[in-house]
Image (tube, rainbow, N blue to C red; front, side, top):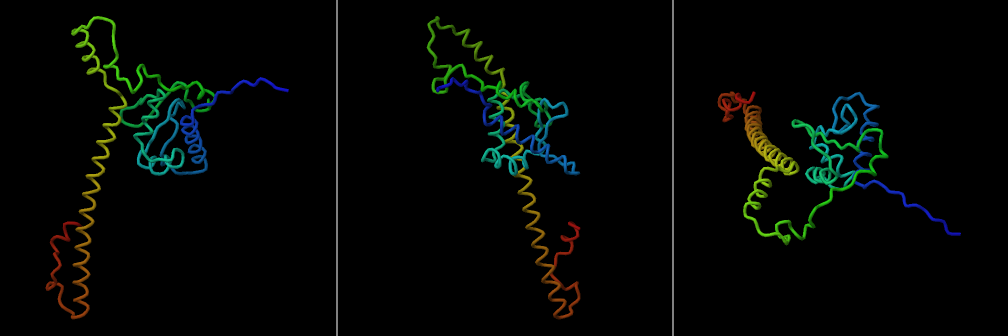
Length: 212
């Protein structure tokens, strides 16, 4: 006997995984006394905050999404209509993405593009007469409209640039300390072997003092 079964709509895997990630992190924090957070729901439960993008990318993204690209994660959020709601932290919200309301995930859909990617808007044929003034207005509107996703990507690129510069500076300091360490060890070795006064060592004491 054949029975008609109604197809049950399931939420997108990306949304389910993001929700699972937040629930697992919250469950893990209940048995922990630490205050450090990588990602969590916000206070109201109507959005979430990535407190440490670096740790989030390194420790969590690979477990849930098989990659460690924070920019890619943000692009996916933007695809489903999430909004970045804080300027000084990575907080995202969607009216259907709320703590304790998993069933609402099925109502979140991808944004629909007006034009297919293979056919850019500026190539679309038009039956209306060509109006240069209208073109100018469209260009002005495109110039004045800033894509939030582009802003976030630029912020990430700038942050990545700063991190690289800081890492380079740290590497230079570490290399300098290693050189001083070698000089100090050589000096101590000579002193132990020949009982020479420390003032005869070639260790750059003045340089060492600057880092102490």
